[in-house]
Amino acid sequence: MEEEMQDTIETTLGLSTDLLEFKYAEGKWNMKEILMHIVDTERIFNYRALRFARYDDTELSGFDDNAYAIASKADQRTIQSILDEYESVRNSSIQLFSNFTRDMLNQKGIANGVEISVRALGFTILGHEMHHKKIFEERYIKAFN
Image (cartoon, rainbow, N blue to C red):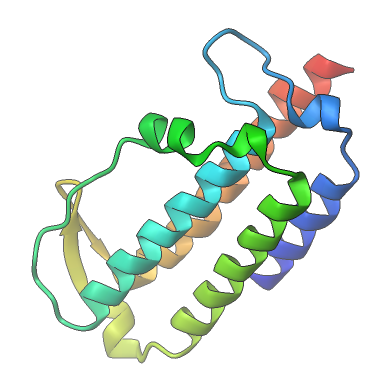
């Protein structure tokens, strides 16, 4: 998680404001909005992981990521502000997952109609970020240049 965080921060800081606000197609998010989506999703997955690790068997609902993206107002924020929040959330994730016991990591719950373990939520956080970073490269950076 730490290496992925450093890579995301270093990569993003080197990008121009024009690129960070570029949308490759109508109705798509810009890179700042995607970064906030990564932050919001990580927070939600951490919440799910905490609930399941504490043996809470309440089924948790999904969330509308498009509604969250609009409400985040990421396009009105500086990239530094977004990265500061990203770093804070990621450091919180690292602390949360590093203190789960093996039993806690193996606990499962249902979120958005899908059964998932605490451990899988941790991997999903990273996989989700990696997925979007690949999209950054393929659909934003290449299209912008």
